[in-house]
Image (cartoon, rainbow, N blue to C red; front, side):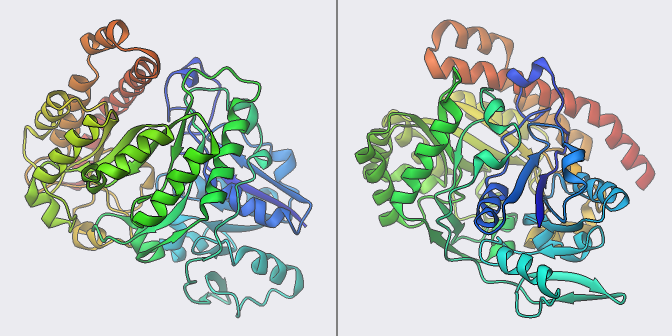
Length: 475
């Protein structure tokens, strides 16, 4: 059995000098999930390998004679995944299996482009699935499989979230990954836990995998960190040595989070870490001290909105006062705050971009990720807003661009608000200030983000012409 995994690129990889400065134009960090599933299958099958269009072109001479090809898709790269599947079906006899977040939530769409959909996280179902294919193709006892037969759709039911999640991703099984790890635009990543106990209406995590948190052993997390650092730093002189803990809610189980941080401290690992967080961790002084001792330099806080009305509208359990208190307390502990923001909420009006930029500049937010309101199929907000979407299945737009008709702004006005906020936060005078006044990692990160945001704004400006076309056609 020859098995290949493919991660599509919304913008497929190509060589460019921009790859050394600009993230997510032709290069981005590959998915850990694909490499975890590859590691599981590698224990039973010799010929398992992966390709990611985030860091390389696909070697079709190696892929097209495979017996089984897994294509893992998120919403933003789903269209590209379907293109690759069509090419494979035309030029190969391989069975094509879709998996990933988008395929889990939109299985009936995905299966039309392949032979099977493997729904859920796959850790406990992928090996039984492959063995069933080898035997007689009977999938009845394996949850999470979707396929078509005799013109009808067959589903074996949604799988339970896996409880055994200790597998360390097989980074060495991804083509060219070790070589490309020398780029400062891609970072080592470790997933320490999975899931979230909250229920924000726009989050696809709960819709796909249910509410709750599953934890890896602290010792496994530390070993994964060691392997990730060694993989990225061996043979490379990386300027930005930062590892990203990619959990959706690392602090959901406080006792466990404390154990993991203490394990990192005991390990003697000396590295810079960044992590995503809800604002509440910023009110926990003990946790912030542990983060500092363990080597964390930054928290990427899911601020999202700056209005209590928006928090309430989307069942985000936050408040502006609480967010501001948390931000200032995190900074008092010597940690940077990166803000993750959403614009295009139902109540947003003209000036939302300036208000966001004012907040970032006034309260010394280290950096900002600004996204237009998004609507992933299967989430509550998709069901309440699907009639406002500009297009029903152009998933490639789900990269921060405007995808809907806001209540109090036109789509073009909203896109310009994003451009305004980005331009003010990442202005040329602030770049010069960063070069002259910042030191070390702070300076490197701001320069990289300045280049990235220039690229983002360029894309958004070009896209306005496309928005005009869509709106005109809709009229």
